[in-house]
Image 1 (cartoon, rainbow, N blue to C red):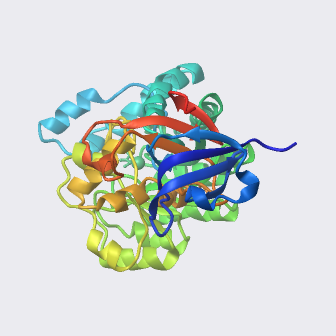
Image 2: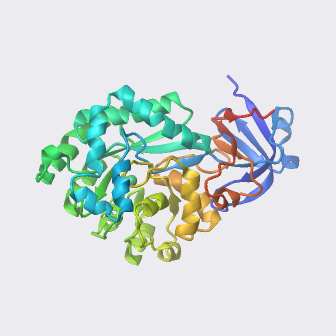
Image 3: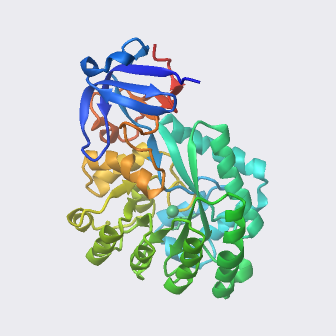
Length: 406
Ligand code: NIG
Ligand code: FE
């Protein structure tokens, strides 16, 4: 069966490939892939008669990729936010028995359907901003059944909505109350039983650990990463968010896809990420919400050529936000990313961070996933603080959002 060919004409195209080239031209999709792009006059003769859609000078970028979220959860932590506003730290709240564990209680109480219904509106806000791929972590269940419930909801969201979901198993997110004082036993359970079981059920695309002095230490984190590697699963790490206990050095030994947060990273950590090809994922809304003052070492990351991604970290405790555009916008202000770096950070580098191969660029062979923008330049994607210029979304070559492009 021959697949439908569509020429999207009269577009301002931001490729987001390594060149970050931008040009005015056309893009040809055949089925769910990009087959050609360039100046329209150079279109090969055999495509000249195909179906056309006129983008009327709008900008297009690859479908955005939110490569770090905890989007599936129940309840909120608005009460804790008041504590944060009054000067308490995230670490103090966690040590006092709040934090992640409060969301664990709410998430355990929710049925799979309730969890889906509470999570879907957050996904909808991201989709309205041109997101076509999202990573979603578990980590608020902390029993085998509740971690499975979260991952099943993540998969179900990907089936119900026009979005590619990459799941990450993050049972090593906090020590659940029933394992208090027995972190080692908990890790045995997570690494030796739950991870292989959920992987066998097809629910796990990658594995993450909160490696931090209020969560899991290096040896405990390594137990989980080692099992992931044994199962052939890629790993990532919540690293250097509140302190530096050597998380990045550990992650890069396992050739992690990404290290995320990184406020307390050093130049040696940047070197290790560069050597391992690990992406640095920056989460500016978490930095903002937690009143952090120490910024990730941007100069060192740039100097050593580390790929930098930006994500929403959508979660109820450190980043109550469901906006990838806000994250990109704040990355330019809070971390001094240049607009093109921020754009690469929510497209190409985000794809690498969540293992979404074939996404994140407009290039021949890539997925025909793109967002259509009512902006005068791609800088406007970050320039606006809280304005969504997304006018439409094409996923797999089919327009799934916005007024139909005729
Ligand atoms: O990315 N730091 C650990 N995990 C999340 C926060 C989760 C929560 O507080 O509920 C983060 O910041
Ligand atoms: Fe996170």
